[in-house]
Image 1 (cartoon, rainbow, N blue to C red):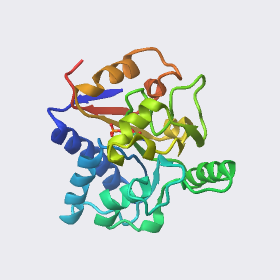
Image 2 (tube, rainbow, N blue to C red):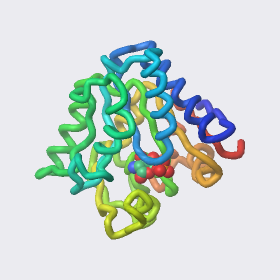
Image 3 (cartoon, protein in one colour):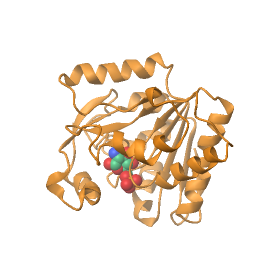
Length: 239
Ligand code: GLP
């Protein structure tokens, strides 16, 4: 595990963007596992800047996102598909047909989840998986549980997670969906490289517990201690 302490949000975003950029330069047709949330916005902005300067191209990249809210259509302003288009894909040269976000509008949950896992397998797995971390230690929407949830699955979101994300829904907790579909821990752990980003001291304690505490499904991010190629870029006070 490599932990990089950045000075501030901008420094974190730039350092993390450098790692994504290196991955794309080394393997132009790589599979990127992408994340949403507030933390990676600066990283995406930096990658857009480099793409506009022609320093990097996403033409042959394929991407799989971690998660989506159940019930939100792709055009909903708070859906993760919408986030990805607006925050990143609309501004770079990626072929959108090669970008995948789980659908929150499935008829058959089990079939949708299985199809998402099969897709990742058909790609030969993920080369670089980008992750943020929730206040309760979730990655993607893998919430604290009795067991590690390995496959893509539908999850009931914890109240604390819904509260943390209510800021994106104009502060309206009731508007935050109660369920999400999320990639499980298997494909995250099978990614060749994992890049975890965390901003500020508000994430310091959960990060410390995840990286230095016991490996437990009660703190899903702790499983990352077992990954052989984990890089953490964080802008909290060094520990
Ligand atoms: C959300 C997402 C996660 C994200 C986490 C932290 O619930 N599903 O992928 O990492 O919350 O978000 P933020 O970066 O906004 O703190």
